[in-house]
Length: 95
Image 1 (cartoon, rainbow, N blue to C red):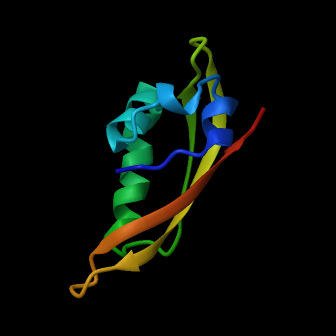
Image 2: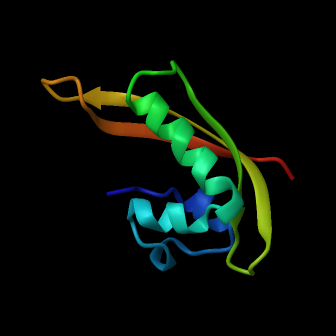
């Protein structure tokens, strides 16, 4: 489950109720040319291979245009086996 903020949704031209609270929703908004690199950075962070998750990518807005941005996030909860269970993050528009 993913919780998207009102501000994030609005910055992309959506109302909150138009955005399904799923990881796949965000994944589908990432430009296809940027997706592999973005997921690679995210997975490397979640696996502990890098200390910070930061990725530059483009997100598709409701109007179909692409917005350049930087994603950054961190794990804030882990289970008893140290697997990430909760993460928080931000998207910073570069436009």
